[in-house]
Length: 268
Image (cartoon, rainbow, N blue to C red; front, top):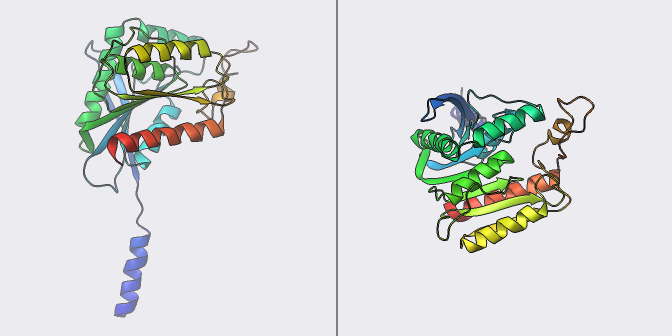
């Protein structure tokens, strides 16, 4: 092979090398001994440490959607961990089961916080994670979890709630919220009505928090999840299910808002 042919072969070969998102399931435990499963994702083409982002699932549990969001974050250059707030990675598509799982997870605020912090510790322990640059995002139930962590003053640079439950387990105190907070809410969300949004704003104003609420036009609860329309009819026979709906526009716009916030706080 001539030197020119060899050079071309090397160049073509190099062009075929692409980044690969590496994923793994990592077992861990809550302080009370509950077995949990984390879904970890990162881009192996990036060298060195990078900001870490926790993903907290919807009330359905640690399902394919929350895992996909971890991969999406990894593709953006973050070290991402979808954590398990229910135990054993369990999930469901039945609203009654989801409601029961969520209520059990929120029955004890200290236990819920401990499960979140166990996941945060797991993320910080990954060699790809910069432990000084951390954020958390959450969906539905997960939105409440990450907002409660912000209220508790957990050291996170940013917190993003997508169609999250906004009611506080314990209202934020002045000066307690350290994270920059972004709330993405659907205009037509009947599960978390605008009255809840106004109550949230009043709470965070009094807490002197750095926050932003974005109302996504014509969007229902669970607007970011492409399975929302199907899940609104799943698992309950002929009975009317939760008022959910996917919105491609709201999904893409809210994700862009998140990226802008992360660029602000992490500089990348």
